[in-house]
Structure formats: structure tokens, C-alpha cells
Amino acid sequence: MEAVKENISSHKYFFLDGFSELGELRPFLFIPFSFMFVVSLFANSLLVYVIVSQRSLHSPMYILIASMACIDLSLPVFFVPHMLLSFLFDWRGISLIGCLVQMYFIHLLGAFQSTLLLWMALDRYFAICTPLHYQEQMALARFLKFVIPFSIRNMFAVLVVVSLAGKLPFCLRNVINHCFCEHMALVELACGSTTINSLVGLISVFSVPVTDFFLITASYTVIFSSVLSSGKSSAKALHTCVTHIVVMTVSLTIILTAFLSYRIRNSLPAAIRIFFSILYLFFPSCFNPIIYGIRTKEIRQIFFFRLQVPDKNPSGPRSQK
Image 1 (tube, helix red, strand yellow):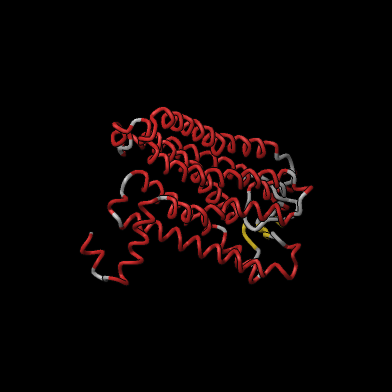
Image 2 (cartoon, helix red, strand yellow):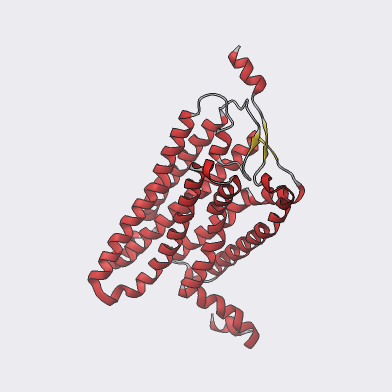
């Protein structure tokens, strides 16, 4: 009888109701978020194009930066268009399957954001601490030993979290107080115990971003120790580390703020909690390409060279290539 009851009452369709308390002001959110979406698409596409089209940038570090740009380019696509349509036309509905698919790709790409920062830290470790063996260590066959295990970890952790969420009976409300299918926002609508879901979600947080953070911290600790002991010879190489540290610090600050705002949601307006949750996913997609484009000297020089040369001498880039 209980199984039959769950089958009858479990919702298969949900409504994303984020920022509903704004009332008539809600449609105006389309303006800032659509602007950020356009900036993210343009900046990341431009960064990928510059790196792919320039052979001098086909080194491991720039390939990792291009990979980060691809992640930042893909992540907003899975939730921002639906969110913008919700703001503009009040299209809030989403099926359970669509919600789970959206959740999977959002959390998977979010996991790879932190993992790519870890791979970048490893790249800088090999470049600064073992420069004579850098090419050997960063050869594809060797580097795949770092890539494959972390990739499998990310896919497995997210798959388990989403699969467990999909098996829950949703016989309470079918209104998700969010703008996309965030894991805990969906799980809290389930009737019955969600202890396993909360525990597995917590384990996945510690096994992916927290583990990556500690490994990144350890890598940069060794790097700074090496730089301080070697003097000025490694100061130039350290410049690229500063870029990665800036990106990592901003990303972790936003992640921590989003996490805490969700945990203390009874003390914060729902709109603020949702805003930080969106910012945690969306802001790095706008922030990363600008930082890498400005802070990375080689990318900045090539970008401004391509902007200036056509005005002075249209045949310049070809003749100097």
C-alpha cells in the first residue's frame, strides 16, 4: 500500500520559483543576468579562439586555461537560458527528468572547475619546482595519470548524488524555491527520510572541492617555498601562479558564501540565498576569462596585437606569423 501511495503522489513536474518575493520587479532581473550571460559567452569564446588559433600558446598551461574557458562557456548554458525565460515570460516549469539532467551537468561542470584549478597548480609545480623535467612530466601519457582518476571521481560522485535524489518520492510541494535544480532545494521537497542524501551530498563536497582545495594549497606551499629559496630566478614564473591564486580565492570565497547562506537560510532573505547560489556558478564564468586575459602576459599581448594591427597594416599578422 505504501509503495502504491508513493507512486500516486510523487510529483514528476516542478516549478522553479526563485525570486518570487520580488513580485513585479522579478522580470527586471532579465537585464543584469542576460548581460552577464552575453559577457560570459563572448569572453570565454574569445579566450578559446585566441589560444586555439595561436600556436605559441599550445603549451600545457594554456591548454588548461582553454579547458577552463570551455567549462565556463558550457556551465551557464545548462541553467541560464531557462532562468532568463522564467524572468521574461514566467516559464517556470521543468520535469523531474529535466531537473535531474540539469542538476547532473551543473554539479559535474562545477566539480571540474575546482579540479582544473588543481591541474593548473600541478602544472605550475612541475614548471617551477622541476623545470628540467617539465616537458616529461606534462607529456600527455604522464599527465593523463592525473586527469583520468580525478575525472572518474567527479563523474561518479555527482552521479551518485543525482541518482539518489531521483529515487526520492516527492509527495510534498512541487515548487522549488530556486532558479535552477539545486540538489538540496529539490531534496527538501521529498517526503520521508533524506538523511542518506544529505550525507552523500556532504561526502561529495569533501571528496571533490575540499580535497582539491587542500591539494592546491599543498602545491602552492611547495611552490612558494621553492621560489623563496631560489631567489629572483623564479619570480617571473611565479607571476602565473598569482593569477591562479586570484581565481581560486575569488571562487572559494563565493562558494563559501553560497554554502553558508544556504545553511543559515532562516536568518537570510530567500532572494539573497538564491543570489549567492547563482553567483557561485555564474560569476566565475564571467570572471575567469577576464582575469586570465589581463593577467596572462602572452594572451594579453596577442589579443591587443590582433586588435591594433588590422587598423595599421591589414597584412601585418600574416607577414609576422
